[in-house]
Structure formats: structure tokens, C-alpha cells
Image (cartoon, rainbow, N blue to C red; front, side, top):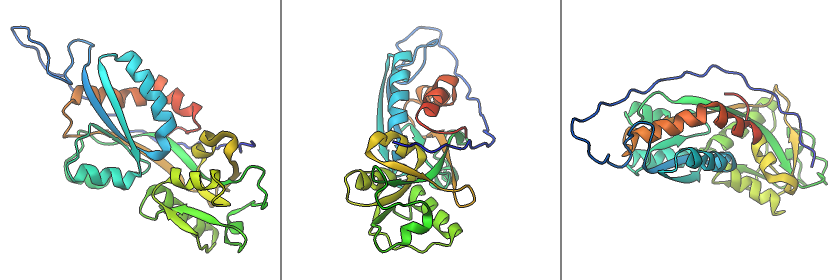
Amino acid sequence: MRLPAFRSVCAAVALTVAGCGGGASAPEPPPAGRATGDTLSGSLAVLAASSLTDAFSEIGDAFRRARPGVELTFDFGPSSGLAAQVLEGAPADVLAAASLAPVTPLVEAGLVESEPQFFAGNLLEIAVEPGNPLGIRALGDLARDDVILVLAAGEVPAGRYADEALARAGVDVSPSSREADVRAVLSKVELGEADAGIVYHTDVVAAGDAVDGVEIPAEDNVVARYPIAALAGSANPATAAAFVDFVLSAPGQRILRAHGFAAP
């Protein structure tokens, strides 16, 4: 599969530092999610954008090796839907989204422990069938009558970014469907149910030989910046903060780069 060159995305990352608690005069077993020295325990639930599935699965494996006392689970899905779960009171410890927009209402509602921090960048790309049999070379080709196009729903970041890129290019399209998230768009192309879909560069990387990628020019492309935040309602705040730190750390960033993500 031809993988197009991926341009670096540069932006400043605001780092925040979490505080620590004091000790007790008589030693007692720590409650779940509390740290004793450098030991963390308890369960941790991470909500993450679907485009992070492969990278965060690997990051999760690395975090479990570093923190064997932690039971880590992931829920991957559309960023807007995950944020809605938090607003509705669903128990979770960390949220990683594909855009700041779904996270902003959580900040305003006091549902995040600290300011969200950007940890990765991404760009859009057109996913097409292997070999690109329809010769799709640009966004304008997606408006052709012989091209079956799928996009993510307009309320999720990938769909909103796709709409913005098409508007920049002056292209009016009629997608055959609007999918729940970007991985559903990718799946349609992989299964041959669509000729093309606008996804992230990292989705094309994750698909391997199942799709080819068509690069979108910089003047039409949209930079996706991914924020992460520990949630204020976490029952395991020490471990939530440790996971956020791990994603921002050199090992976490190396894993993200290996999956095609750019610097935040």
C-alpha cells in the first residue's frame, strides 16, 4: 500500500502539574485508586476517540506493564458521544478526544480535574479501495456520480473536519451515508461498501493493505488536535493523573508517532 508523506503538525502544549496528598500516622491499606509511594492500584476507565483505538491499546499495554496493580479498561467511540456520557454522569476517569469542542462543555461544568492538554495531532486523508480503481486524486473527485462516498456524522470531529475540508476546496458532495464515527467510515471502505471516505491519516495507517490513502493538500486539509483530561468525578484520581502523564511522556509519544500521529 502506498502511504503518503505525513506533514508534521506543530502547536504548543500546556502542561499542568497535579499535587499530592499527605500520609497517616497509623498505616492502613490504601483505598482503591490511591497511591502509596510509587505504587498505584485500582481500576481505571478511559474514554477515547475511536481514531485512538490502535495507539491507545498499545499505550494501555505499556501502562499496565509499568503499573501492574492497575486494572485498565477502554471505551472507544465518537468524541461527542463519549463527552455526552460524562455529562450524563457515566463513571469514567480519563477522556481523550479528537477535538477540544466536545470537551469544552465538561470544562464549563467543572467535570474535568485540570485543564485539558493536547497530546497528538492528525490530518485528514481520503481512504480508497486498494489500487484506487476509480482514480480518485483529490477532494473534487468525491463529487463524481460514479463515486460512493461515506463521511462521519457532522456532530463528531471527523465529520466536522471533513465538512470543513470540503468547504475549503469548494466541493459539494452527496455522501451515501454519515457514519457514527471515523472507524465506521473506514470499515465501509475496507468492506467495499463505499469507494471512498474521509478519515484520518492514522486510520489509513491502521488499515494496512485494506485501503490506500490519497493525501489532501495542506490548503484544504484540517489539523486535528487531540486533548486529554482526568475527570473530576474519578474514583481513582492518582491513577488517572498517572495515565495522562504517561500519554504525554516520551514512551507514550513514541507509541503515538509509530501509529502515525504527529506532535500536538
